[in-house]
Length: 483
Image (cartoon, rainbow, N blue to C red; front, side, top):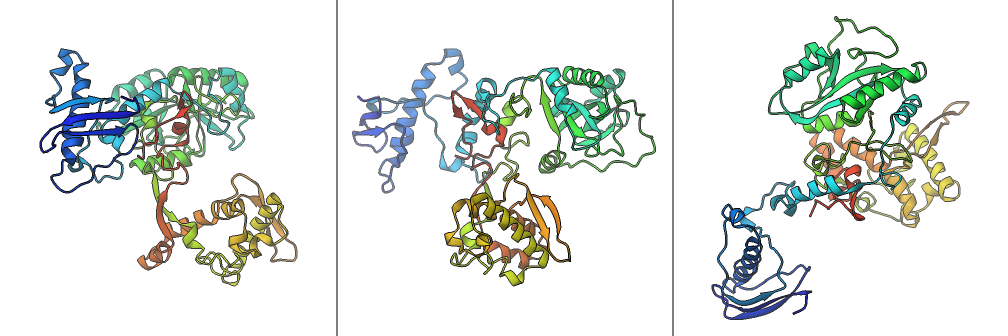
């Protein structure tokens, strides 16, 4: 017997008549035949039954009493068989979030394994993530320049169910005045009644600081306190993003608490998708004394089984929301005639050059100049060359954006050109935004003729966010959950 094969000799289960076969291991095998030919008898009642029986025999007698055992199949010999799982066609679900891994519950064990044993790698630098010291965190906070003031939050509840009345009382006794509850900064004394059966996120507002004006020592004290309260993790968010009208705190720069008569902050999103979007839009920075990239300094939450779950906002891909597929524009459909150039209407939804507004033409000309400079093309060539002749990387930038590369947009409508800087998100994201904003069914159908369901471009069909995809176990990435 070869270790690469499964040998079956003399199978007589049900209507099998002394059948002997050799099957290759680690291959996809399909049994075909007319009804009653013995397909299920071989697959389920012989191979699966024997694999399950042998596995159960390896367990203790105490464990076996809780598990239903299958009878020994009527067969002379089976060799090379591993423990087996079986999924009946009748038991499968039409839920798009169900996979072989979730139905058999194997994925639950894989999530625990990768969360506890795997090594995290930085999505940007592709190097192992290491811990940050308190001094390193303080230096990073002093370098922040996106806002005038920031809040330092200590996460105390992360996606857990409960009402947390005792927690709020304890925080008040410790002198904390405010907390961010499910995305909304409120006074702890006025904390809303939380639904017991819903998952909540609670972060204590420890301090407010100005990177340019607050003394280093005071920032260090706030960081130390936050790391202690948040179990080695803290969150930094611009004060404006945290709803500055309602979010005063124990400010380390000595500012007073906010007035009690302020307007109430807008309600936080209640749905899972809403919370995921709010967290993404808030521009918050997660820092940890245990889990951060030593090169670029990007911090992440320490890995948990929830991070490996595509059904959880913590782990799902932010683009396809954990489905692995998205309804988006197909490059082949939006360019029905690749012999045309962009100026001649290669992208049918945009139309020809004269169909565009003046401002859009100026934008595309500026993007074209940037692309031509980046890839050594002649002036105007990216707009006038037939689409089929453009290099693949040029098509990629036109469709999906230029990334973080700075582009100078020039408005040539007046006597003196007006310039401003920015980036280009790509024509496909722009069309997707128009599709989402379309009000009438007729307008949406106009877009849908150029769209199809495809693997998510962001996660490649894995359904997971960048941090989860960068967890590796002996160089093997986190398991693809879309299978």
